[in-house]
Amino acid sequence: MDQDIYDVIILGTGPAGLQAAIHAARTKVSVLVMGREHKSSLFRAHVENYCCITGISGGELLRQGVKQALDSGARFLHEDVIKTSKDNEEFIVVTESDKTLKTRTLIMGMGVSRNRLGVPGEKKYFGQGVSYCVDCDANFYKGSTVAVVGNESAAVSGALTLLFYADKVHLVSDELQVSERLKYQIQESDVDIHLGHKVTEIIGDNTVRGLIMNNGQKLNVDGVFIETGAKGAVELAATLGVALDPEKFQYIVTDKQQQTNIKGIYAAGDICGPPWQMAKAVGEGCVAGLAAAKYAKKMKKNQPKVESRPLLSNDT
Ligand SMILES: Cc1cc2nc3c(=O)[nH]c(=O)nc-3n(C[C@H](O)[C@H](O)[C@H](O)COP(=O)(O)OP(=O)(O)OC[C@H]3O[C@@H](n4cnc5c(N)ncnc54)[C@H](O)[C@@H]3O)c2cc1C
Image (cartoon, rainbow, N blue to C red; front, side, top):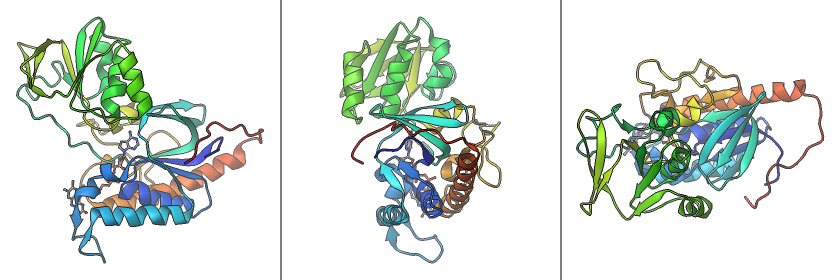
């Protein structure tokens, strides 16, 4: 891969992201799709209610979708994005192995995280020391002791972020499922890693005071960040100023072109709210892909020509 700026970067290789990729790439813009098929909700499904297709496993549907996207000209990078930012009219994404990529438009198709820990105290202390968003709440824990719970990029990058705020950061993880680079970063950091452990209870009085692990050990903490998946949509969107639904702050709000309140950022699929169905994800992905490609072409036309400088080189 050797590209100074993409026209469209798509976060998500579920049906929303794949359909967006197929439609965008066919209009001859450069498209990069990020994420992992086996992390799509569809991977575990056996779909019987999608028009014209029956009896196909979600895994097979995804395999075919990836092939269609590749055949249409899209490229893939099987990594999570852990940071997003805006640079004038363009967007920057940073991956879990620290690759920095630039794009004219961004399509968010990261699905929904249905992951709760489901342990005693989690619900009771939500908002009173239990948080699902490091980037939203880290600031409240200046000088405190906190724990992050999870195995993937959200947990590890979240723990590293919290080092800038908290006095002491614990990471409780069953098994680290992140890139070697992120693994190295966390192991070399000041984060106290409790590997091979699960949280069994969150305890406190009016607010969180600690957590108990499955080996019986107690950690005294003021906050517990539950980050059990990839870097969550809410966090990646929030840092870009993307508006979320005003009621639950869980879903991205879009217009009929699937554009968010930020020009050049689109969203599609489960991330835009229920019904959580493949048919809706595919429809929204199609609209987002076409709209993003059109917008990227318009931007390109309006931009003065500059000498191209490669931002990234790898073998994908
Ligand atoms: C058990 C089960 C059964 C289901 N059965 C049906 C059914 O019968 N019919 C039906 O229509 N629907 C069904 N669904 C729902 C359907 O699977 C979803 O509606 C659909 O997959 C949503 O697509 P999506 O593309 O929005 O998100 P997803 O398919 O969830 O894809 C999300 C993608 O985002 C990527 N991602 C997440 N975070 C990041 C990040 N930080 N950086 C990069 N990439 C990221 C993931 O790797 C993944 O590729 C079922 C779901 C489940 C769980």
